Amino acid sequence: MIIGLTGGIGSGKSTVARAFAACGAAWVDADDVAREIVAPGEPALAAIARRYGSGVLQPDGTLNRAALRERIFTEPAERAWLESVTHPRVRERLLAHLARLEADTARAPYVLLVSPLLFESGQDALVKRCLVVDIPETMQIERTLSRDGSSPVQIKAIMAAQLSRRERLSRGCDVIDNSADDAFMRAQAGALDACYRILARA
Image 1 (spheres, helix red, strand yellow):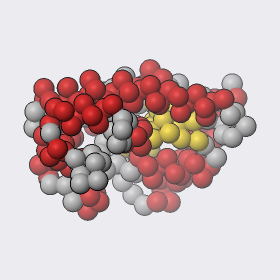
Image 2 (spheres, helix red, strand yellow):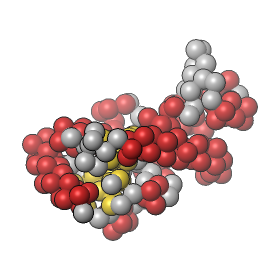
Image 3 (spheres, helix red, strand yellow):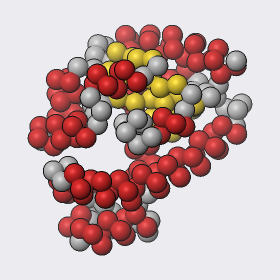
Image 4 (cartoon, helix red, strand yellow):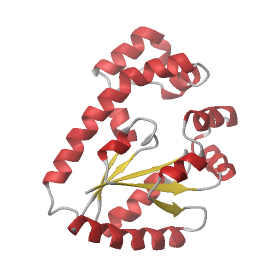
């Protein structure tokens, strides 16, 4: 059984996924896959470099993600182009990773698909249930500022490109409130893990 895990920027999706992993779940992170498909030698990176030039590349040939973000998040048409190049490749690679994990049923009782764009990209069609990691929007901005040094303008642009908090919550089957301490989050993850194990056996 595949559970989709999503949340807005700064909500702590990876931290929550690690809590489920500690319970025995397997997981695939769409962000990791998105980095895989723009690695040097990948067709997606070549297409990006052709469109935007060497300014979006680091000296070692890897993608300069900050420079690319600056170009696309203020230009909806450019973001749409980038998604047309990357989303199909991410989906294809995700399916391959998920198939390998599902085939190894002895390894884990269920699999998490961790994706910030689970609903926006249509990846929710790949899962049985959707789990939303939720925090207030002001906390999203605070945590992201302290995490990676992005500007408030960039963070708000990323948030605007994602579903609103209200819509994300309305589409989730389950919710984890990650606005408090680690123990509070882990207690919720433990309770959901027990439910997911029952559903997976059924």
